[in-house]
Image 1 (tube, helix red, strand yellow):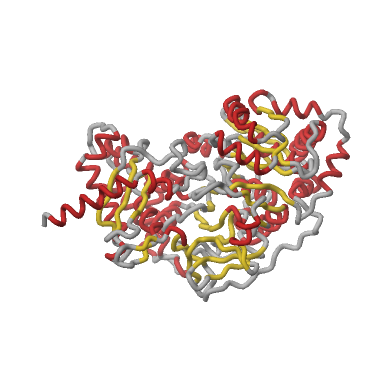
Image 2 (cartoon, helix red, strand yellow):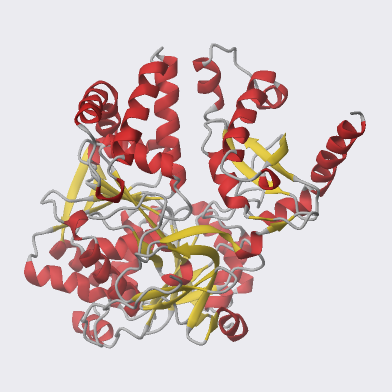
Length: 605
């Protein structure tokens, strides 16, 4: 099977827009909780009516400040309630919000402000305001900058007291499904970021379809979700709109280092996250067990949970003995992870990269069903997602309603439907290259099974061809190695080389715990690079990854680098994707040395 059928899209009037999702809730249940704001040690509810009043008030202030229909307004901030409030207010004013990552450099910020034509910007802090000020010469049309920490919401709202609310309603009513909702700039792993133009229809139709397709996630009466991904990322933005479509109370937290504590107080029933979050949860739990002398019981409980989950594949059921073992494992160990995540968490959606079968089965054994999905900025985030009633762990599921994918002869995934963007802003050449004959070329490689479930096998542009002519998809190896608690990043190399190798970086947060758990004295990162025990642990991780591939695809040697890939050194995008070309360019000497040393060892016998 190389093509999925085009499923039915939700039936929505042509004049509907994202703000109508808010209007619908206010009309049906004005007292319903839409948001929860951190307050003291808990969370304060914000009703649909209260939020609408705040958003319309802020929109009146935007109009009074000269923001008109179709104008671009940038938002540069960490994930917080004011981000969402500004987002909806801009939409209520008939304008177009443009997200900027809060970690963006002056050059990156200047490019987005200039290319989008932003006339105003919300920023979170004085530091962000300084970045925008330095970039302002690139964007002469930028007239105003408002700072959340300096009272921007109250100040802009106060400006609009003389603007009739009817002007806001008229501006919002003039926007429909085909109108531009936002311009989201791609991560820029190769070249300058491109602005993907997403419409109100992309968000409205996709979220309404998702609520229908994975209805079980939205059924609990106490349903809620906590958003901790950066709202400049399309996945988080989709979650923001999905919460409105599914009428799920939403909380925001800007600091992932406080995530466990926030999960404990917020107690969500569902979360949406990238695989790295799930890896961190598992690795932290494992290291805590080892440090407490409970390594064997944790390993047994984890293995039991995985086996219990695997037994359910294909509609199967665990046997009586396995069911009893799982009940014991859950009572002794696994329930502690569920409690650490708030106790109510039953569903999670994972996207932005492969989760891996081991983690998928482990978390289902804990009691958290992870629905793995797949999508890109250009597909408004999720194009496919697993269904609660029929999960195939290791796949990214079938298409969401109103979408279709097919596999090209070279293995590339092509997509069309309600999720696909309308084109790149100010870049018709890139649009024509990406969308051909109505199909968006994702650049990802994949497979479809007989049920239309997709499996991602790699990136088309990242395929490595060795000197022997072997095609190697690095993602499978990299993802497996990155699951080890000591590893922060892994980059597989070998283009035109006699064999495959890897560049590894150590995780500074996990290293101390790993050393302590293994009865070792503390080491600096530099000491750990050459430590025999650390290298042996990483070799075991490499061996485990190699077991999944042929010998020609296996990693023969690896190098532990003396630093990590970060956003600051421009080796990671703001969405935490490795800029492969940048790393290979800067570390060409390291890669050459790796192969020269290996050749020398072979020459010596």
